[in-house]
Length: 297
Image (cartoon, rainbow, N blue to C red; front, side, top):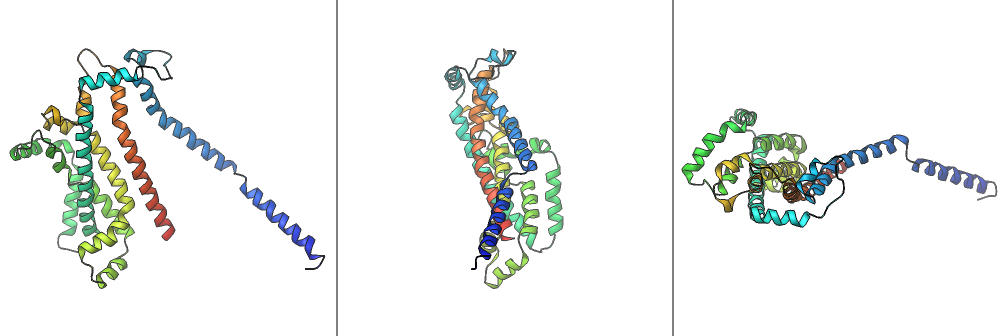
């Protein structure tokens, strides 16, 4: 390199470095977007913080103005009152068993049905799928009385099985996974699996399920949260105090003489922690699946 080329090269490097430095400066729109996300996150998290604050005070604090925004010293007292009045850990374990059982079975049954509806031709496929959609459009309250009569004939009234089996057929789950699988799973991939000698179950397990992972993560979160928060059906069908679910047990904290909001917020804080954990795990899998699909595409 001659003497004239050296200054030119240094000038080009300086220009390139300056350009890189300029590109690293965040744009105004990016800063505003991040500020909006931060403000939105604060507003979203505030109800949880307010619930925690109320759980550490007496019930009268909720009526104070201006409201108290700092934690108090009644958290242990409120939790002690909860343990005296209801078996919250037993109710939570019952709810966890029901929610996990329903979630796992719904994911299994809905994914099998959705895979068949999306990728296989068989007589009456469209009619059967229309019937599934029709059951999804009907209000669930219409099935309460027939469902209770059927459960009572089986002798399951008061048992946790009465909460699990009526929830296995999820019309929304079949519809959601069917729509996702139709677009996300190429027919050529199934044809290649068929040429390799894979039957229906092997295609489902080795080809369809990995493709459905983001949709399964969302459906798992949706199903678990719905089963965890279910109140009406457990209230109707459960008559054994040792088999109560969490939402029914928490309703016993309300009395005709008033409601202790400090104790109620403390129990609600316990109830919402598993939901936050499930949401964090499911959201991680959901976003990981979306990112993986975007990279592959």
